[in-house]
Image (cartoon, rainbow, N blue to C red; front, side, top):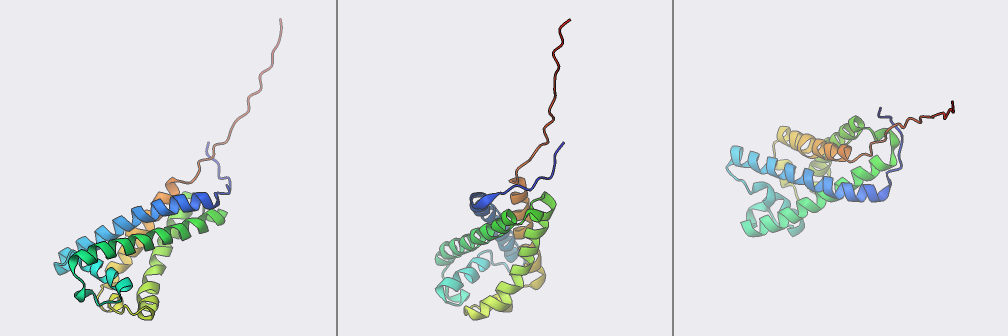
Length: 176
């Protein structure tokens, strides 16, 4: 029988699983975003152009495809992995988040919150207004919440320790 025992997961667990989970979720997110861009805008690389525009401080339309692919992927994966570590560290630090359900819900909630924060608060500050101007809010809600947050939560929940209750059996030796 499995029991819920609060386990100190530690920063090692958070870093290791946050990096991997962030990478997995980042890949799922990017592929979903790029497929949607292909279907709805006939522009598979459009999301990578937008992401590459942030570190390059260049409008997405002025970035060539090769640069967009390299810089966009590196930037997106770095951000996804750092966010994965932050989420995993919070989960490791808060025992109430260490059940599979709570982990998935929490990571999904973070995915949902990070979208408006990134697009409507951070993007204007870092001179990247195209995120708010050129994206569909419904798609962004779906991609950030589910393709990133839920996937990250599923990965992290799969890495939670499974603590099993042990039953102690006592045997009595009797001599006849």
